[in-house]
Length: 159
Image (cartoon, rainbow, N blue to C red; front, side):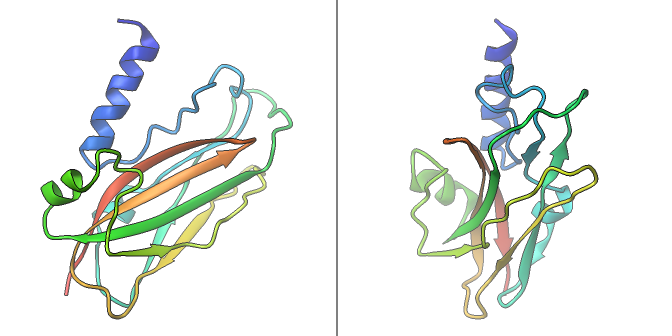
């Protein structure tokens, strides 16, 4: 099995377990000298949220080893879709979990980091005060130059 096949298999397994995306763009060799972003700190995912709270998605930044090349602007997006009664129900709702058909969606305004050293972007997703308890799918995307890398995690909202 090749390295890229192993990475894809590992990334697929991680996504199904509810962890964040691998953050490796499809054309990683071309983008090797660019800043990349991936979702998120364990605390962001492991926290139990309540209606009316704001979820913070702390983007992890990976800077290139050498000087960064000029790259198209990056846009980071994050949204929650749900609720689902169980994790199994969430996973069964759609074949492609990147676009689950939850009853409601809570969306963070897109952010456009500059890629400057030390920058730590954070997306803020306001959870409605009338949000129902359950499991929500957190969908995150790094969009750049017409392409995107997406991932997801399972978040829980409690009463």
